[in-house]
Image (cartoon, rainbow over all chains, first blue to last red; front, side, top):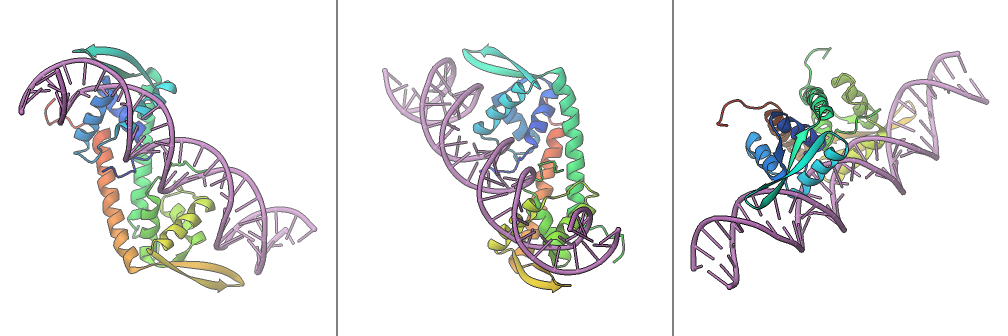
Length: 111
Length: 111
DNA sequence: GCTTGACACATCGTCTGACTAGGCATAACT
DNA sequence: AGTTATGCCTAGTCAGACGATGTGTCAAGC
């Protein structure tokens, strides 16, 4: 599957989900699938690099947990990440409004 | 400037603008800027390859025009392009609704 | 005891596509 | 003559999503 166009907005979504509570990678995949009603079913090769990226840039911090002999890396927003989450949301709103404006011809202004 | 995240939706926008009437590359850049209230100010290295791509895949057709000694390549939607425009719009609606759903935590539905 | 499938993480390589940075040419204004 | 606006083009770079693949644990079924 995969529609290959999360494009740049994956970070915003990860930050948004983690705003509620810390979560591990696999859990994030499931939560994104749930919230998007199945639209986003991320491959693992998508999610883990994204999380590493966000941690490297200081927006997330992680710690290992062990549950039933299985290890998990649980990610949480840093202070910087909390700010970034807000910015990314605003950025998405602006972006999507602009696309909507282009796709929906404005009737006014002559013609 | 460029915010580097048109990401996959440029085709949809080009097709949408051309749905109104045929236009040339430079005109498309201006029209996108106008409709998006300045949000999208595309570089030429973005627009022309995109147009070539769309023409190669049969969604657009083009012809040369000469206005005041300046040549323009005017693009128009093909039949296939008209269908594609509808599909891309639907696809955008689905995509943006899904992102919105993820970014805006749904209170209901368990948990 | 072995296999299968869900859970859980990781990395490498590929491909797409936006963008940078150049180049070319004409017309109008200064 | 230089600059600005119009107009097109291509080669190269880079980010990022994705497929494939590998590791390991645990529970259930054969």
